[in-house]
Length: 323
Image 1 (cartoon, rainbow, N blue to C red):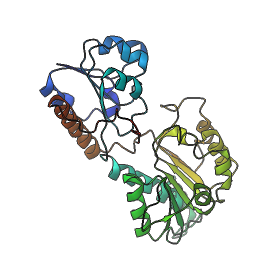
Image 2: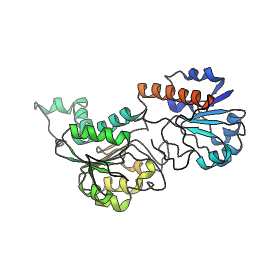
Image 3: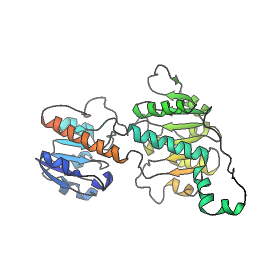
Image 4: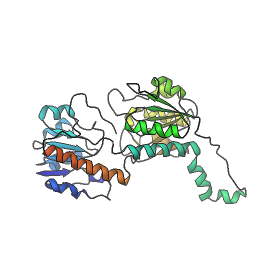
């Protein structure tokens, strides 16, 4: 059996992808441009990928393909309708990044809330030493205890963020399609109005695309922080950048973008230098232990498929994507 890794560079250069050789002949490509897909997929029965878009046109040009293994929970980059119609199995990995994404979500919120980069820079630049005062308390920062943390989407990641926020003394509001017991669940508009911190943990679908739109961004409190570690397109990026630039919200922490890497004409380019903006390069899922777990889970998905199992299969009616 022939297996191909299409975008190994997105998985980091510190992991051994050779574990997939146990299943057959393995080809590893660091990157695959759209015009290279047909050649790289030629003869492959298993495609291992992270961000590559598998459209109907691409899939039709890969007649030997039997299984697509996605190195992620989200699968909005694969045409599931085509796969269902043509008998191509699709597997994702669920829950592997919960700890890591939750950790980065909290780190972003705490850093923005306490202005850590500015305080660190005051020491690094020599301003603290030159000031002659034992401490420095500008910019003013506030305790997170007693603040309201709004969580949009309450799967594995959202729930863990909620538990951590509670432990820090926050009131937690949850917006979820189906309310959950023991949590204060509210409509999204109400959450936007009340949240001091709003974090997004929803998959990208037609239902969630543009979920935090210009109108809802307008509902946010002055000083509110927005953390997006879900998908870039669940937010109106231009409206969010405008709100930050105009000082209508307190700041943003963003790890995901509609186009990746961040293009030169992206709305966030205009706010890169602001101290209340924390932008990261889609790294929240990628701690070392997280990626090791991801590869091991993908190997188990392939092993299950070869033995006739349906482990982590998503090409079924009603399947939804996530991070």
